Image (tube, rainbow, N blue to C red):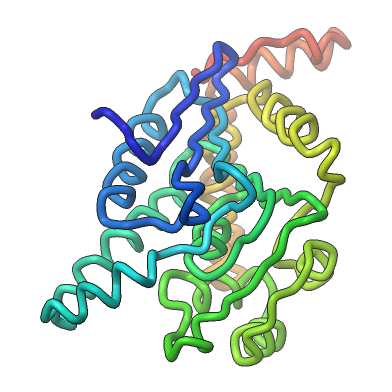
Length: 267
């Protein structure tokens, strides 16, 4: 598929960057861009050569989510509630796949990150932001609610009180406050942003891919399970990993005090 609104970059070390590329609209997505997002993610998240995915936005924004102007035009063209639900479930399915895929996904946020853009970031595993970034779930200001993970995912990562305050107030906050509220994981200077993102991606790319994928699965399952079930998931995950070639190689490297030199094969 030829992309108009996505820049897809693959590095030899397994790091893949998916850049939302509609800077004149702050990377708000329209119907064509949504389709390109789905295709680009799915083309790399099930590729064994992919070790890490970085999601970012072109220009001075990460993303504000759906193009509100296009939504209003569609409503005026007799767009039905069923049409809206069909559109919404497609983006929901994509965000769910990002969350559950067996590859670490980094949201690299530099600039405005609100509404659906923040919901996209919440589906990623690690959110790293420059100190000039801004965050908000401001759908309430236009008579909406966050409907693509803003309610369901944020309450898991930031808690009930923070989620209600953030959504009901409709405030836009800076990166440091977003980190303080556990909405994002890391804040770095805009001057070192690119270097920090690449360093994080490279660190993850060098780790055992089966281990990172299993860790994602188990952590996600534990987030929705009771304590006893969670302990069982941990045991099952560990029992699978103990039979992998990567584990044997890492254990041998550890005993030989040569662990940094182990090259993980994903087997």
